Every structure is written in C-alpha cells, then in structure tokens.
Amino acid sequence: MADKLQKKPSKGILKNSSSFDKQEAHAAPRKSIKETTWDEMNIMATLHPPDKDYGHMKIDEPKTPYNYLNPDKVDGLNLSELEEKIKSGAALPPKALLEQDESSDEDEDLTPEEKAKKREFEHKRKKHYNEFYAVKLARKLLEEEEDDDTSPTSSPKHKAHEQSCSKNSPN
Image 1 (cartoon, rainbow, N blue to C red):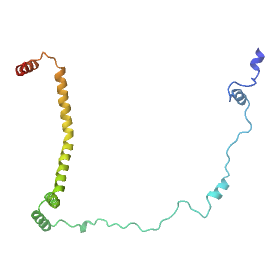
Image 2: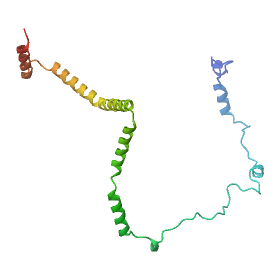
Image 3: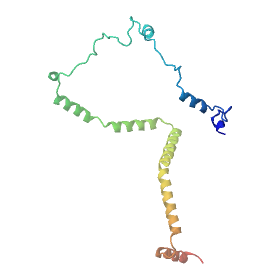
Image 4: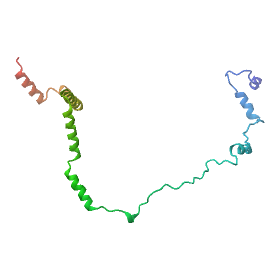
C-alpha cells in the first residue's frame, strides 16, 4: 500500500489537472526562464532619429496685443451727460407698457374667427394651469370625507348633523 502512495497516477480525474507536475516543478528549478531583452540601440535608431525633434518646437509669434489699463486716461462720469439721458428717458413710457401695446395691435389685425380661437385657447390654458390646484383641492376634500367616515358616531357634531338631517327628511 505504501508503494501506491508513492506512485504517480496514470490519469487524473480533472481535465487540466497538473497538480503533480507543479510539485515536481517547485522541487527542481527550471533552467529555461524567458526574459524580455531590449535592443536599446535599435530602438534609438528607429524611434529617435537624430534629425527629428518630437514636441520641442519653438514658436516665434508675437504676444497677443492687449491694451492695459492706464489710470491716467480713465474717464470719469460726466454729470451733465447723465442728466440729459435721464431726462430724455423720463419722457418715454416704460418698456413693459410698450410691449403690451404691441400685443393689443396684434388683436386688432385678427379676424373675428381668429379672435374667438385665441380667446378659447387662452381660456383652455387658464383651465390647464388651474388644474393642479383643482386636483389638490379634490384630494383634500376626499381626505376630509374619509376622515368624517372613519370618525366615531358619538361625536357631538355628528349627532347634531344627524338631528338636522332627520328634521329635514320627509319620513
């Protein structure tokens, strides 16, 4: 039986079983280890020819022209010019009012059918914008109804409500 333990199996169970080979490899060091060797002279000759510079260009361009601020030449505000601009601007109506006047001119150019279409569109737009608030109000009312339904029937408000309903009912 001891001789069977020393004997190497003829074929392993696993397909790529090399566990026995690895044990032998660790025991005896390999003689043929491949290492990468570089031919540095060949690399220098092919990738770095002496007549070529990579990325070492000298740019002979003038600097970008820029007018630096000269504190001696700074112009101050002329109060008389400012007063004139303010006075001329005060005579004109505000820009917001001018834009509204333009929209009323557009209405005048429209035919009665187009005016009706435009009014209908604006009405639908208002309904659409208010729809969010309507849904929010409806949800709130539903929650209040559910709260009323789940509240105990012995509350004084509920009794008063029942009494008023019974008085109004034709029974």
